[in-house]
Length: 316
Image (cartoon, rainbow, N blue to C red; front, side, top):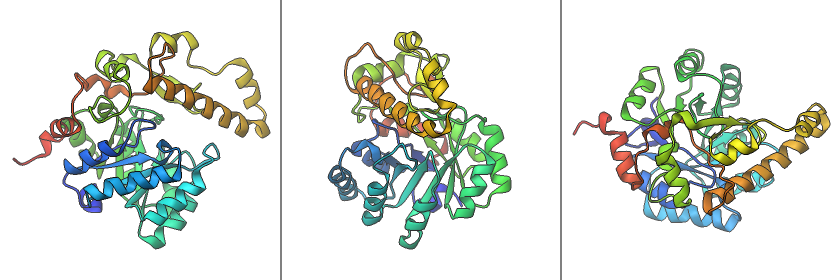
């Protein structure tokens, strides 16, 4: 089953949930342009704000959209957010960085679809057995938390051994990339980076201009910001602080009982640093982006970016 069939949309494109970046205006623009979109639940500080965003989007469109949940212990809001999303009967939830078992158990009876981020076959088969509706195959070209494998290896492997749809995430900047993923067996694609430089994104102009200025060769992997590998732009500040964990972090990680607490501390500290850089002028520029930054040439409205992205898929 394709992504268009699953969600009743025109194009097999999911505008990826991006921490701090995704917002209601971006989702509405995506829905109006024939795609779907999701927002990280963590983009909202309060339950009231999360509910308000849902109703704002739903008042503008009846098309399918979703939310992303971080389902591990680093997210203290997880349980409350899951209950809220179930109460709102969202169309789908994307799970990341942990077991989706509880999400699937709660969502299945309500008809809420669950898409799970996966980076390898072993984990994909686990979540399929739990009852996931689709796999988000995160490859090594993805922005944010990327996987270790190329889409050329990951997608065919998942398609061959799993029965549920596979959505390719990473490295999509043109309609040609969408066609490549579909030809490999993907049901659709998840696209993030190219939409950071959109008019609707509420991040700083400096962040948007960085998407225009920097290239794919300027993307590096850092393990200092969230406890997991994260793709960031190699700004002078990132070069200054380095991308590898410090000595104390490496030592503590050897102690299993301290590891989960350290990861939570790293996640909170790193996300605060990313948030500060995303919305204000600061020399501590830590900007998340993927290699598809290469295809960003200017700051444009969402509908214009999407129109160009799906140009090769349209029949008009």
